[in-house]
Structures are given as structure tokens and as C-alpha cells.
Amino acid sequence: MRNKILIIEDDAIVRDNMAELLELANYEVETASNGKFGIEKAKTFNPDVIICDIMMPELDGYGVLYLLSKDKSTAGIPFIFMTAKAERSDVRKGMELGADDYLTKPFEESELLNAIETRLKKASVFQREFERSSSGIDQFFDHAKALDELRKLSDERELIKYKKGETIYREGAYPREIFMIESGKVKLSKFNDDGRKLVTHLFNSGDFFGYLPLLENTKYKEDAIAFEDSEIYRISKADFLDLVHKNRTVANKFLQMISNDLADTEDRLLQLAYDSVRKKSADALIMLAKKFSERKDGQLRVNSSREDLADLAGTATESLIRALADFKEDKLIEIDPKTKDIIILDEKGLAGIKW
Image (tube, rainbow, N blue to C red; front, side, top):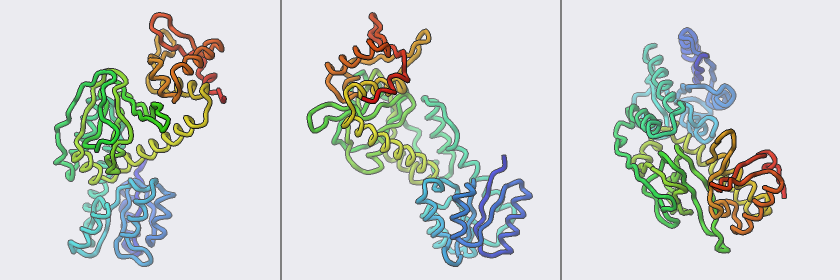
């Protein structure tokens, strides 16, 4: 599959010559004669790299980059500026807006091809699916360090062991790092206005957490507690912000994670506020099954204390136990008499509970 390049250039001769060269180099090319058309093409063509002139009528290159960076679908596309000026102020302004590279016209064919190839290689670093383990986070940060602008990223990452029930951070504290789970599980919980404990998030091995308040520069809104014995990497605030601020692709990935977190939290709080105990208990079981369950002898098992499950459902432990008894009677679950594991017999039946 050929990589796709979008050229935004108002000079027809320059634009056509560049397109011909890149097509000969086996790229799929689209062109736009001004910034306005360029933005439209970027959204429909979904290029792997955008090459854009700075000085154009109607909308200049700075405006193109600014508008594309505000759109989630185009914010992560590598962006190369072209300018006829070699003035440092032009270059600095473009790089401050988030451009990945620049070319000063007139440029050699090799300069253009090398700039594109470099951007494609660097972008591919963060499109890879890294293993969700200690070696995975090492790969992620080692690849990030390979970028020239991130060579100063620290090699020091602190691995801390937490016992089940131990607090990792508390609500109201200011963040100083983000966290990545090497092994184990973590829950975020808080008390509502009625004094009831609610579990708002669950995290598993390989998950990042604690980055939202750090990016917002706000206090933690929940307690982070080890759901079981866990080993967790602590990544310094300075290293994390250096990574996010200096690479648009990384920043875009974390913005997507934040967007998903906010949507999940909003949905979950609505469920806790309006759903019945029976539905909340079923949803809590399904949530645990998706995040933490394991299969033994072909059975889907959830190993959780009834108190933790009640916190996740946002209900009293006694109410949760009654709901489990109902599910057992309806043959949706079984309870292992030895381990007290909850064995899910009918996941679709649990998910179909409406009230």
C-alpha cells in the first residue's frame, strides 16, 4: 500500500513538479491550490504527510496548520512547511505551531524525498502496537528517545510495588507523575455526596493512569488504590510533558485516551445515578469480566470481593449480594463454593438486563 502525500501550494508549476516527482517515487499524491482547499482535501484524502507552502492567498500555511491541529482526525498528520524565506522567524513560528519540519525553496529533489521519508519513519514509531508490559513501555520510550527532539528524555523510570488495598495517590493531591501498570490492577474511587464509595475507573496491566489531572494541571479527583498486589512504573511529570509537548503524534494519542476516559466516566456516572440495583450489579459484573476476568476450564470467572463489587456497582454490599442471588436463580451466574469466584454463565443475559 502506497503512502499518501498532500501538497498544498498555490504556484501551479511548483505544485505539478512536486506531484510528478512524488508519483515517480511511488507515493499516492493529491494537490490543493490554496489553504482552504487543502483543509478539505486533508479531511477526505487522509494523507500520511502534508507538505504546505507558507505564503498563500486566502489562508496561509500557518492557518492551515492551526485549523488541522484542532481537528482530531487530522491533528496527528506529519506536517512539513515550505517557504521561500530562510528567515529564522518564519521557521520558528512554524515549529512553535507544531510543524514537524520545513523546506526552504528552492530545494533539491533529494531534500524533499528525505524529509518525507524521515517524517514517515518517525510517525510509524507511535503507530506501532507495543507489548503491554515492562518491555513494551521500554520500547515506547526508547523509540520516542530516538527522535532528535526527545533525546533528553530520562532513562529513569521508577518501579514501585503496592500491596492490595494500598493507596497510590489520594484525592486532592497535586500530580507529580503519571503511572503505567507493569503487573496487577488499580481502581480509582471517590465518595459521593451521600458518603457512598464509588469506583469510577478500573485499570489493568499495561494501562496508563493519572495523566488527565497532570495535563489539566488540577488536583486528583479520586483515590488510586491497588485492586490487587501490583507493580507500577512512575514516570516523572517533566519527562511526560516533554514527550507530549514535543511530539504532536504522541500528544494526539493521549488526547484520544482522555476523550475516551471522559466519555466512559460520563456514561458510568449516569448509570450509577439512574439504573436499578439489579442493572448496576449486572453492569459491574460485565465491567469486571471485560477488564479483569480469566478463563479456567472454559469458564469465565470474576475474582472480586463483594465489597469491591458493590463499590463498582455504586450500591450497598447487602443489595449487591441479593442481586447476585437473583442472577444465580436465573442461571446467569454460579458461585464457586471454594474460591467464591463468580462464574458467568450467560454474559448476554446479564448485558440484557434493563431494570
